[in-house]
Image (cartoon, rainbow, N blue to C red; front, top):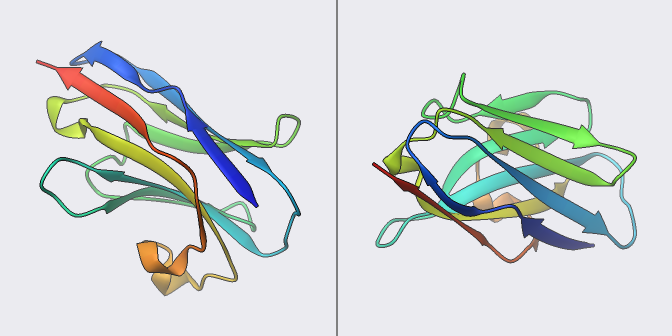
Length: 124
């Protein structure tokens, strides 16, 4: 499985961005696609995840502002980010894993495949 994240950029506070995670390679069942981010000097943190059942999960810090969705036609999982804040500035990564139990959906080590990051910078 290969993942490629795109869509990052430099925006102002309050603006929106849409990140895409393109997936390719051998498909697998019972998957989860997650978005994580890492700011300079900080640990990688969970942002949002999409599970094979269609369920979605969000970090409290982005709930109500970010939306994760799947585009089957394009084989992408997208992260729509609205009302961006300077604290959202980070490198954003998409990741994929198989049979991740619900209690571990926010745990980066549960994901086996990672794409390269895409930089999101939000100026105040």
